[in-house]
Structure formats: C-alpha cells, structure tokens
Image (tube, rainbow, N blue to C red):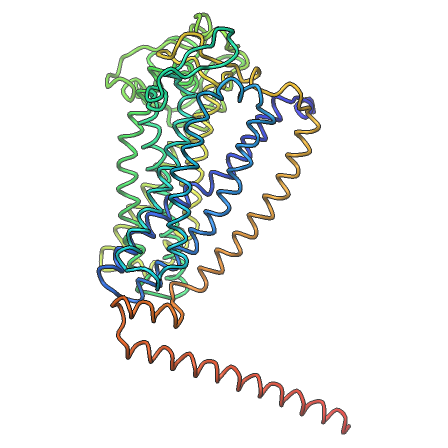
Length: 510
C-alpha cells in the first residue's frame, strides 16, 4: 500500500500505462499502412475491383487505429506538463523541436492524405490515390522518427549542454541531438518490429476468412503478402538487434548489465531463460557462454563491468545496486528473445503451407493459431520497450558514455513537486475507465469492418470502373443486383407485416 502514496511510483506507472496503451496503435498504424499501400499498388496494376475493395478494408481499419492513436498520444504529451513538469523544464529546449516537427510534418502529411484515401476514391486519379496510400504510410514512419529522436536523446544525450545554473539542458547542435548515437539502431529496430505486427494482423484476418470460408481470393493473396513481409522484417530484425546490442554495450553499460543480470565483471553469457536472485546477486538459468559478448563485440571472450563496479564510477554513482530492477529487465529482455523464436516458427510454417500448393486452406490448426498470432509480436514489442525504459533506471536522462558531461537527470528529480499522489491515482483510475471504453468500442468497430469484408458497394465499383478496373456491364450488373436486393428486402418486410396483421385478426376472431 505504500506504493499508492508514492507520487514518483504513481507518475511512472501512469505514464507507463498510457504509453503501453498508445503503443498498441503505433504498430497497427505503421504495419497496416504498409499492407494498405501494397494492396493499392496491386490494384493500380490490375484494376481489379476486388483489390479496390481490399484497399477499402485496410483504409477503414487504419483510420480507426489512427484516430485512437492520436487521441491517446495527446494525453501523453499533457503529462509532460503535469506529472513530469520538472522533467519538461529540464529537457524543454531539446524536446520542443522534435515534438513540434512530428506535428507539423508527419501528422499533417499523414492526416491530409488519409482524408484522400477515405473520401477520394472517385475524386482523384488512380495514380494519385496510390501515391496517397504510400504517403500515409511514409507519414506514419516519419511520425515514429521524430518521437524516437526524442526518446533516443533521453537514452543517449548529444548536441546539448547543461545550462550555467544547472537547471536545464540547452541545445547546441540540432543535428547532433537529433542523430544521437542510439537513434539509427533504435529507429530501424522499432519500425521493423511494427511491420512484423502489421504482417501478423494481415495473417490473422486472412486466416479468419479461410476458417469461415469467406473471400478466398483475398485471403490467399493477403496471406502470402503478410508472410513475405513478416519473414523479411524478422530477418532484418536480426541485423538491427545486433546493432542495438552494440550501442547498448557501448553507451549504456548499466542497462547491458541488467539485461543479463551481471552484478560483477564477467564475460556475459546469453541466457535462454533464467531467474535473477537480487538478494544474492546470482543468476540461475540456461545460457550460451559468451553469447552476449559475441552480440556486442563479435568475440566470445570480452569482459564487461557489472553493476557493483559501475555504481562506484563517477558517471553511474546515482545507481543504488540493491534497488536496481535486475530481474524485471532480465525477464522482459528474454521474453522478447523467446517470442522472436515463436514468431519465426509461425512465419516459417505459414510460408511452407501457403506457397506449397496453398495447402494452408485445409490446415485448421494453423488457421486457428494465426488468428491469435498478433499477440506474439505485440507482446514482444511491449517487452522490448520495458527493457529499454526500465533498463535506464534510475535516470530519466541517462548519463551515456559519450554524452555531454553533467547532462543527466534522475527520474526522482523529474517528477512534479506539486502534483500529489491522490491526484495521480484519481487520474489513473479515470484513464483506466475511459481507455477501457475506447478499446472496447474500437474492437467492435474493427470487427465490424472485418465481418463486412473486402467488398465495394455499388458506388465504389462504379468508381473502380471509371478508373479502368471494371467495365460498364459489370457496373450495370452491380446496380441491377442492388435494385433486386432492395426490392427483395421490401417484399420481405411487407410479407412480415401482412403475417403480423393476419395473426392479430385471428386473435381478435378468437
């Protein structure tokens, strides 16, 4: 119960909760955005109305996730001025530029061309519509870049200095601050991860259609596209993971030590699974000797300093080893690695049964697995963020080895001094209620779109015909079918009314 009266813990917990919820929609936007752009490119080449209908499905799902993502992202920025006011004052000169750029360049690019995708199918040329789809995806990637510039600067500060009075960070070189040492590896690792999520969303929707025996052509095409995007993204993730390990070992040695539970200097193994006993400072588990050393340096025998040695240095004397979240960071890191293996196995199975004569249509067990499969990359992403953010504790601005001298801030010093624990607890409860309602509403909306399927109404097919995808006879057929459908519905309604009236007369006669 003491934690419920601790404003530092509650401020951290609230921000973590809002970030986790918000970050559900970031991978959905970027990942689904790529699937949307690929599908629209296919339609531009084939002029097949079915491809236009498929793009329409992705646009609706993307728009729903985009709206919720924007709304939940705003609350995070507000928290900088409330719960984290002291932190905002310290980094305001640095953070102002990337956050403003994210809104001015990325958000408006994404939202303007999303409007074209929603309303412009029959108002712009097919080429412009296809370019708009790619610009929406590019805008989402650009938005992630600016946010990661800000986040990476917290991990590896650069291009700034401490003010004369020591109260805030002052920017001295914008490009050095933006392209700080961890940005490249962090950005590519994040983008590749979220593309994998988009691929698994495509696989899940395709598998659901296969399981229900609906939209077979869309299901097979999307299954193949998702499998290829997924396997390429995951293979490239191996490269970005190696680059990230190198940066962490060089710039954030305490995080590197936490990831493998190193309390004393050693050649770090790469644990497959284990447990860190923080009381005895021992790790119990199964690992590859020298594995982490190989990931970081390319050699199997490089020794790294442990937490006890690092805490005695001038740069990291703010760390209390007994309070370090060693087991939490260890478990989150290895859960991420384990999930990587699970994801690769699923993708390999999907590739085998999709491209080998399309036998996946008869594999009900694999279809059921793929329907729930998006949870694996989503959990891996959240575990990765937990490793990254908890791994830099107890600093909110980490004293990286190449960072400017003195440009660091402890998490406890970044919390607002005037916001009380009860106030944070109340807002946390309100966030929980509101976000739960939003999430349920979003799930219902997205499921409704998926049930409707990748289909066009008569107006949509007419627009596709104008762009060259369907001839006039097909449009006439669609319009005729629509008329008959309306007539049949009205006839059924009239029949039902006559039956009801007859029942009333019989009852009156009795």
